[in-house]
Image (cartoon, rainbow, N blue to C red; front, side, top):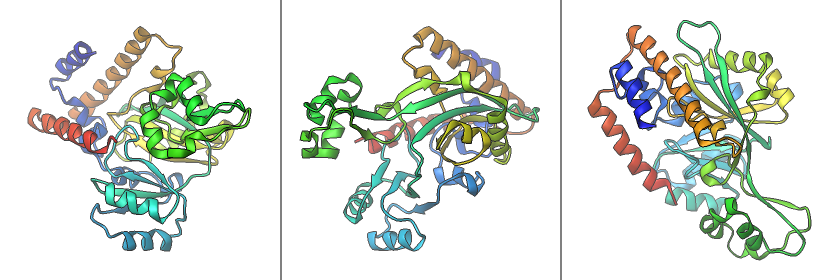
Length: 321
């Protein structure tokens, strides 16, 4: 895809044109942006309760603040600057929190656990001169799980499925001896409760379900996020009908210029189809960036862009474990 990016870079006259796509986000939301800064852009009624902690915070002080603010176990801990769900963990007790606080290489967030069991990625685009944006793709996320047959251990079930087998090392570290347990026939066990393909989730393209009611709901939220024009919202929800109506859902992530149109990862799509879809979205990203540049916003300099890429690589090596 590099020749495609080069084409749009020439058109925009900058390799790092994406910085202008979302003027209110650091680096346009491509990388190295604080999640807390993004949460502060979103109306509070649409996000989980979230607390920010310095990486050097003392465990006792952090735990006291969590409990004083009404967040109880289990809760979610995640890096403030992260990627691909690396470093995101469900914390069940004080010992797990102590381990997380001692491990984390960066500032981190604690969030209340959202009760909804379904996750969807919704890609949103609104050009600077448009009154209303649009949804350009939508994906349902199936968490990595195994289903019992009454005879096989969890470990055996994991090895039978290439998708879970690729996660074996991390799963062994997480579950240990529990992987020797038997699951009853038909019993489902969720191995990784996060909708990231790098952690085994399956993405199913449901773009055909986009409707005017959902567009109105998502546009209502995004229009309140000053300077946000391009990116993906990851949402936990109860039912699709309620999501369309703006009920019983919570936004857990907003990805800016670095957000992928992840419906391309549906196994039913071909590589060529995915390339076309990526090119289509990069075209919109370029068009928005050029329009915002004309309105007075700036691109990243080549020096700053290279520094961002270097920082991103270093962060990924720290978080991936």
